[in-house]
Amino acid sequence: MTKGANRSTTIGFIGLGRMGFEMALNLFTKSIVAHQTGGASGTSTTTTVDSPGNSGGSDARNMGAYAKTTMNKADLPPAFVVCDVNEDAMQTIVKKVHEKFPEYEVVVAKDPSEVIALSSTVVTMLPSSPQVQSVYLNAPNAIVPALSKLAQGEPTLIIDSTTLDIDVARDVAQKVEQAGAMMVDAPVSGGVAGARAGTLSFMVGGPQPSITLAQPYLTLMGARSIHCGPSGSGLAAKICNNMILGVQQIAVAEGMLLGQRMGLKPDVLAGVLNSSTGRCWSSEVNNPVPDALPNSSAPCTREYEGGFATALMLKDMNLALHAARTVTSPLILGTTAKDVYENVAKQSSLAQKDFSVVYQVLKVAAEAQTTKPPSGDQGSQR
Image 1 (cartoon, one colour):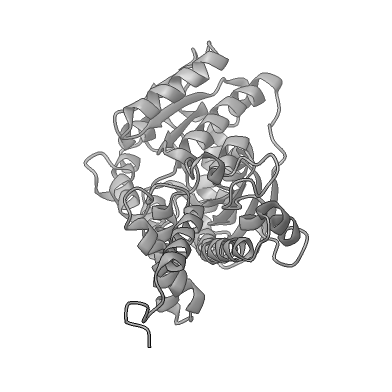
Image 2: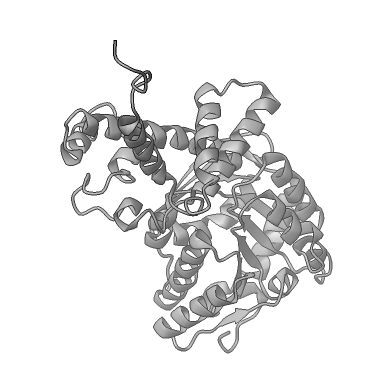
């Protein structure tokens, strides 16, 4: 912490995985730069979609209290707190911030309740629903009980960027608001590379007053945020997006493999796709074939390490299927894609690799089919 820091100027971050680490590093360092230069950092844009629940009495009152408490925030230095089960991740971010800004420190909290005690603004980025329920509700030192213990007039804004079940998210948001805090769901798109570059897109759900307060922090971590509607709407949009992405990645893998087996060079086929109607993020940025894209840094160029884990894509596909069953919406390709990722994730060596590794699984299957003797070759010739 810097000298003179207090709760109103402190930002907490819980969850320093692949995405969370990069998001927190941007949030912390850009907050420092913004304070030093006297202005906001980043060029984020917001699209607001009016919907039921965008404004309300309690949230508007909380917004007023938050604004009143932090009205002099620009005159005070920001401070930072982190919490994660991975001690190495916490120490690494402490070191990185200190290397760039020696006068600033990042405090390592022992549990989520300590983050709440020290921070008026908290961002969480957790694996999925069970972890959110634990960190917010069920752990011995969870967030909601800690909020209830704050002194009256100590407002808190919470931004959850976890991709999780919508019903769980809405239940948690309700309990957070009942404890006197404000909350938005803000899942992201853009992957680890986008988190590192600060170009993420946020799909945001929650009351408009909370969105207004969250926006400056989203700006420091991403390039765009879209208010999708009331609580849970950001997650609904994210689940739809990732279901489409999962299907696209398999289709690109199949198309790239088919083209090569018909004699096309990977770079030539990728060039055709990316200047034609087959163009998509999975072909243009996350192309699964090494050497398909010039000067590419896609996961396939480093043995599919460092991207969006197949296990996480499987989680998102299951979230989509659960949502589809709840609202009775058919997912023909989504169901098939889920089965594909499930089979890939069963291989322990592939579960944590980028989900574009599905291309390698298809390639191995094709090669095995090619070398398999045709049916009936074992018998004698007539």
